[in-house]
Length: 157
Image (cartoon, rainbow, N blue to C red; front, side, top):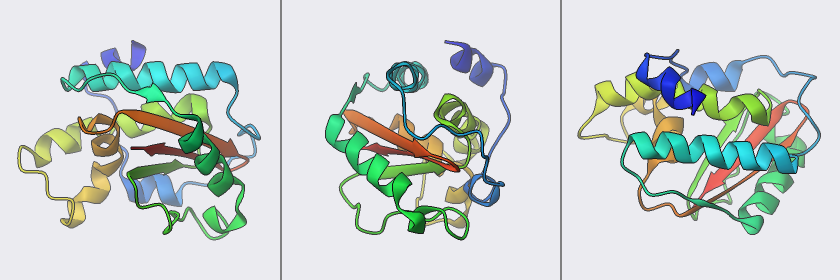
């Protein structure tokens, strides 16, 4: 709920370019712990609630795919790179650990609000609010995340 309060108070805005170019942190855990899974899901659902989106559930298959991509050196060898083979939903990536990733993406709310109500994901400004957009899409019903040193990956479907 702290994230929702930060959103209401006008939290910091992170664009995709900022997240993607952020320095890789050596303090990111090697995988998402059960406690982090619960927090990622709870925080995401709190944000979804602010947008009138229904809650989503944790999905082991999405988490497994996210972990596999986080473990793949191609995901973070030269900055962060999305998995081009994942096309059944949306993928958020961050160079911060799982305990910070949702709040980083939630920081894009102000740019998201400024872009609406006709959000155009083909517009270059999408880079400023796309992570937030992915988290609050009403058609997504599940999520799963993975992490390794230097990258957190969450997928939504």
